[in-house]
Image (cartoon, rainbow, N blue to C red; front, top):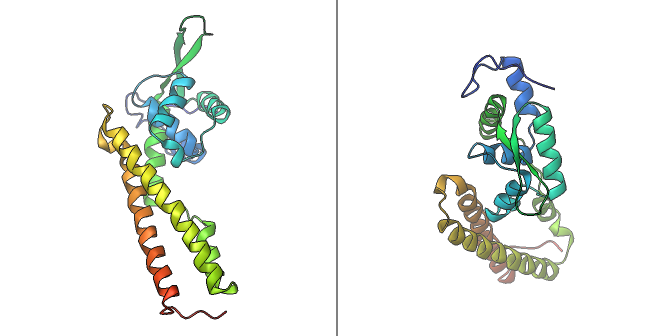
Length: 208
């Protein structure tokens, strides 16, 4: 599936119907790939390495195989362009990709649509909280204590990631999501710690 681009540069010449299809077909991993190539041309192995270095795996599931498949699909859809090949030593040639005009449009529309119309997410932990009253209070306290340790580990990991990213020649705007995730996880830690205290002091009555 290819999309007609009437102009160049920012890709604003893409027809309205095509813009809808472009944004709808981009997956989260696809958006991450498009965003990388908005910086500079890369081959898939570079994309994988940079995504892992920037800890993007905490935002989207990244596997080498799925990334290569995503790159191929984006190129087939006309969102990426092959710019040539690169060879390092005795390694096989690697195909270099750059962002096409249609890819720029797809990325911009995906970000705009996702930020303005976020799709509902259904994490499992809040559902478990909703049904936690089916367990004894001692069991719930034990489970929340274990979960709190996981949250604390994540907080430490985000702080370490920020420290590492600050050392890279990368503007903060490129890893703003890590700061967001840190704030989100910190708020979750505070809520769990407070709830544990309320359960242990019996300030929070428990039905079972």
